[in-house]
Image (tube, rainbow, N blue to C red):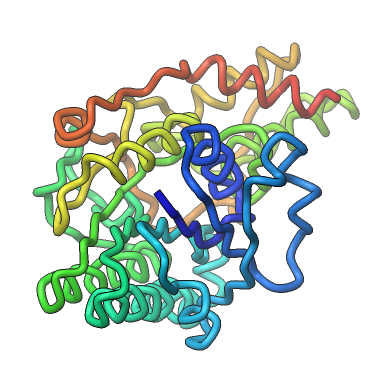
Length: 317
């Protein structure tokens, strides 16, 4: 397949581009102008197999230029992907996540209307759109009840995409990944943030580490398993449907903190810091991925302990 990946130079995009090339696809990487050069992250093995296109999701002409025939699929990752960033600029998150997705959808639907291509559009949403709920695995049939600017803007992106599917027949598939991590993730996310603070404590022999609320339960995946789910959905996802990508097991943030401290070989007491507490945090976010497993045969293969150990080892070098 000829596949465009938007946001290809992001954390997940980099993993996805490599995996798509490995599985024999022709990949175009849509990257923001002025971002990190492709050569710095793609690696010699994949460099010659990937085309790079300038892609700015807030610019209609840029989107139309990138989403052009011949193309078989688009994986739309470009987004404000950090809850913290979205809270700092809620309007900006809507411009990028909701309106930006509407631009991509419109360009893909235009190809179909012109008869030049009939692309699959995989829109990457988030499990956070479910908001607060019962302490049980979330299903795709559960109500969408976002409670953060990030989640709300992603719900808007889903609405824009599914409206186009109903109106134009564009083959839209929605992915709802639960939290995921891995080597190379930035400090705006919980595991890298924990690691940075724990390493600082180890270096200074501090016994206390500032944290936010450690009670929330999360379904945490390895980024490589999430990428495999995206690849599987390109082949097996049903247009008009949404699919949870989840391990189906919960872990508290306190358990994550303690596991990382153990791997680093330090004893550290987490101390609540009001500046790190997220308002209206979701207490329990665990997913049921039975629908995805039935449609594609996907299942997670990387144990959480392995992911955490790799991240600890990577930061040690």
